[in-house]
Image 1: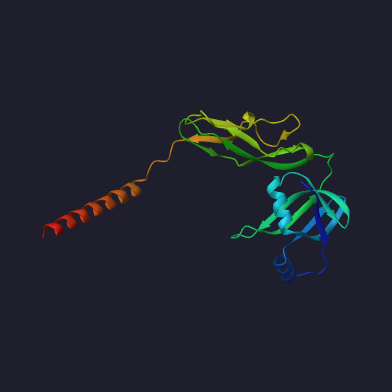
Image 2 (image 1 turned 90 degrees about the vertical axis):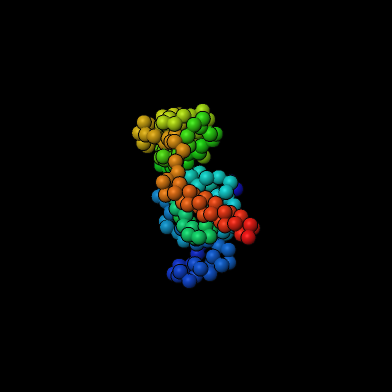
Length: 208
């Protein structure tokens, strides 16, 4: 990811000012860390959104503020509940030589031979150096059967990454295909009965 440019915001800005920033295409944000005092900044919304599409939010990148480079990770994103666009961002400055705690998403590929594969956990917590953070853990569920499970220990974990949870915890489970409920079956039968009755009435009308 290329470095993202940011600008320092004036102190005392209000929610009204934040809304004006957003209308102009900017996103209000804050950066903080052990070597950086809390600093209110703004970043161009289009640039940040495009950057986060190129890599997951748990990977480090460079934020340039007034010519000074800061290695940061996204700590929190606030999005519009309907539109999904970013409303506010929190960036945490990190040291590339110190381990960080973060979450790595679990992705599935393939299809079970029988049943439906379901994610029990959508991510796992890890601890490692920022440069060693995996973008994701991908699991191929081809050939799995109903009742099969994938455990944390079954994931392809690099030796440089430490897990922060029990290796026997289930992350994927293969379940039977959900049967139709009695209510849905009754509704279908009722609909079929109405349809057959309508056809019968139409045929009778033709005979008259």
